[in-house]
Length: 235
Image (cartoon, helix red, strand yellow):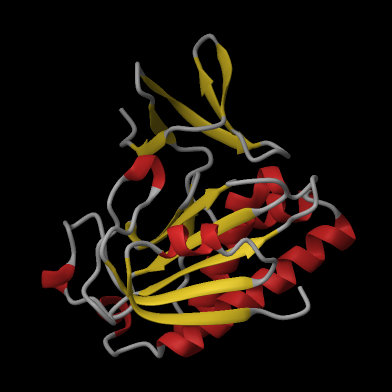
């Protein structure tokens, strides 16, 4: 990237929707509040005004990078959180960032038209316990005990996106896949992959060069390109 063009709003329906209307490489839409923020599968993503970092960025990634954008963005967000707060966050396939097993950030990658991708990021920065939807979620404020500067967190995230995009262009996408592996704790552990028509249980074995999840089952290894993953206790 040669630079990010940041547009700031007090309130929007969704940063993803605004970004999809402005398909220009490097455009970043930041909002203090979203009336209808969404995650994967159209699920709502809600946060009190001014307490979360909510933004969407437009990229036109090379064809080789496009399939692994969810992994790349996850690595960038995780590294930005670590750099800003000192927290050793971890990644859960396909699009979550966790601290101590609870979700602190979510990622949504959409491909609206042509070469463009819209990267949506929501980080629970300064939410208090009463703001959270359940004990499966947390915030940076709760984990470190003091508020986070949202502008510093945004700058760190965009900076890490730049770095990882440059590394992928120079060294190939395997560098992203390996970085993701190094930042997750789910590989080698039992998981459930929840699909619309079934739930598959097995051991999360690896991710492929295209970002798919490999799950080992008694009958062999199954490949998943989508699905909700839950970590489960060993029998």
